[in-house]
Amino acid sequence: MSALRWGQSGGRGASGAALADVFAPLSRFVPRRWLRRPLRMVSRLGKGAYTAPPYAATILSAVLLSTSATYGAYVGGHLDSFVQSVTARTGFAVDQIKVVGNQHTSEIDILDKLELNGWTSLIGLDVEAARERVASLPWVEVATVRKVYPHTLEIRIDERQAFALWQQGTTLDVIERSGRIIAPFTGGKLAKLPLIVGNGAPDHAPDLMAQVQQFPTLAAQVKGYIRVGDRRWNIKLGNGITVKLPEHDVGQALADIVRMDRENGLLGRDVVAVDLRIPDRVAVELSPDASAARMAALKEKPKGLGKPEKKI
Image 1 (cartoon, rainbow, N blue to C red):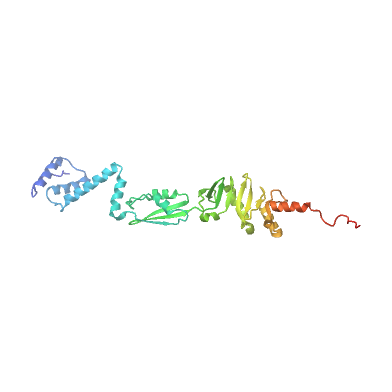
Image 2 (cartoon, rainbow, N blue to C red; image 1 turned 120 degrees about the horizontal axis):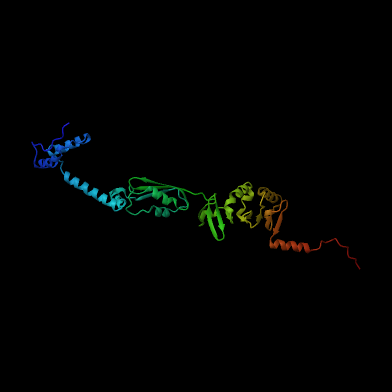
């Protein structure tokens, strides 16, 4: 196996001769097999066998400068900004935002989480980071951020399902069925949600509400569920009556109150509270006016029960 011979003369210009002279010291080495073909091409270039295309030097200079600029941006930690700037100015700047699925989440809040400016490039945008920021909004359960080239960003949102309003002291929050707080109550359509009050209420409210829903006439009158001592419930009706439920056998107590209302119109009377805490007994608290009227009636003597008066 013979070595490649460098510096052969014949039909080459001065530049070729100079290039051959550069590689002349390598003539004593035997290159590896995979290097032979590239070295042979370089050797022919030195002999003038190949002619550089027009503007090759300009193109190579531009490549060198752009490569150097990219490398410098990478070393300096500015590569992302460099890519953003270049691609945004070549027609890939984000200028359209499409938001789908939001009812309680403001589009302004979504745009704020995207952290866009007038020159944010769609190519350089980190969609996963943008998705995580959007998903951090209170009402957002699942968020999807998708690039639609050349300049549109699409955001799809699945929001959390509101279950009830939970009051703790002066604080009123919207909660999920699991009891997780979604966001503070701000009014609007959410005012139609059932109200639960007290510590521990979110943990037990779904079971109580399910039992109340079995009695539609009663459920239609309920305005609030009050947890007492984290042991039992009071139900507040729309007409102001409070139904005090027992700690156990809640379903039976609800059935009893519905039956008494159907037979005697109990929940339509002038009463303040109906107490069902004691088994097999119902205590009714009258309103002040009704109580006063009853006391007056009890003080009156029944007529026709004494001896008739003698006439003189």
